[in-house]
Length: 303
Image (tube, rainbow, N blue to C red):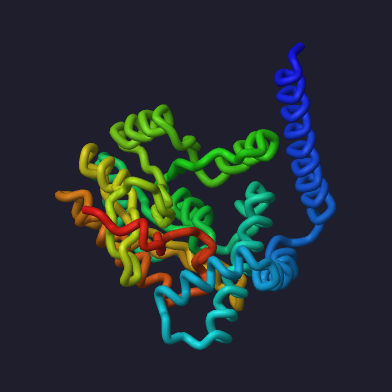
């Protein structure tokens, strides 16, 4: 074995070992905390998550830069409160994902706008539900499933292969199919929706090369795949969100009126406008930690 091959093999085993340790730690924490109710557990974890994002410079700076871009006149302490709140939401969501099979039984969910889901189902052409990293989108899928509209989801696989396999056993609890991003995943998505199925797509992350559309007053690269699929299949394009109501210990899911899909870019601009309105209403419910906007002078918007 050559020295280069030897180092490659050694690094590969190191990577697998680290991945396994992280997975084992997550599984152990799930086992140790299983007797605790989900809302009780997430309340404690949320406080820790809120402080972590404030104390870790990378998370805090990225979120504060985004907030300063959107609301330049906002006071520094107000921005810090929103960052802390977003950290709490992120921590709650991670815990909920680790026990999604239990959340299916425990979550109390109210839903508004169920008539839009029913209309899509009756039309027989499926639905493309668009949402964001806001509240917990899995609660929205559960609400749709309870309303008779089981909804699949397309997601990016975890880098950790053990966590990815574990997650793949949990995500279907909220609905199937579960599709991975990529060419095959997109083919399966199109086939599913063409057959009258429903799927959820999270559209609030930046994708290099996507068209620049306005989001919260600034140009942001926005994928149009959700509108493209809806237009091609005749499916309804439905914005949906799950607002976490901590005081009441429940989620409030809201399905909004369908967006016309005659033009994909116009449709996705309307989606961005609706998501932006959600963020303005409950800024701490959105994950401000993404690099949603390009802010360097070298990366100017293009048509």
